[in-house]
Length: 209
Ligand code: ADP
Ligand code: MG
Ligand code: MG
Image (cartoon, rainbow, N blue to C red):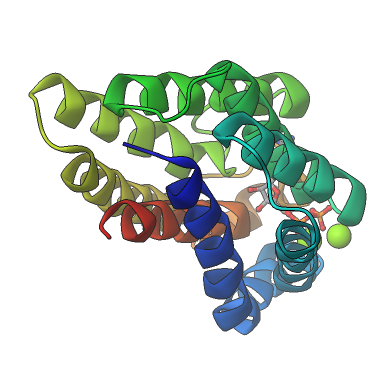
């Protein structure tokens, strides 16, 4: 179950992963963007952690929606509103549930995905964070449907996110700054997709304890 404690561990773990991989994320963005993705998400996730420290959330919904709002307001780049919307909409989908089971977590992530599609006017195949997020959710959904325990389903999702991240190198960017490059965006991994892989790694780690 994704309990409040697990949700907090997820957000803290994502911040730690992002800080540890800041240079890598920035290098990916230097190739096809403006070299700020690592700094953008490091700043945003650090603000999320500061919020958690200052005011512990009372439930899963509050933890995720507040983190989403913090990302929207603390990151200047495209990724703040997009990752912020992902968490906001996922949190809103939780309602008053004290903890999410596999189906509940898949539903929350699907709501987040829909938010990213709306806000970014993006679809899978556009070489964006959706190209890691969508296969991750599909993999989690399939694992949960076969009765896999949630930690195992989340690990499967994290592996799918990494595969989706790597496959963005084969895509031409259609959204965001990288789209200005046209075919020259081929061969490079999308930075936002790399951040989604970190987000899913953190989720798997938080559920595995
Ligand atoms: P910026 O492009 O404003 O500098 P970042 O570098 O922090 O912002 O984030 C770039 C990432 O945001 C991209 O790699 C991509 O995954 C994601 N992104 C950008 N625009 C969109 C969009 N319209 N829809 C979905 N994702 C997007
Ligand atoms: Mg950038
Ligand atoms: Mg920028």
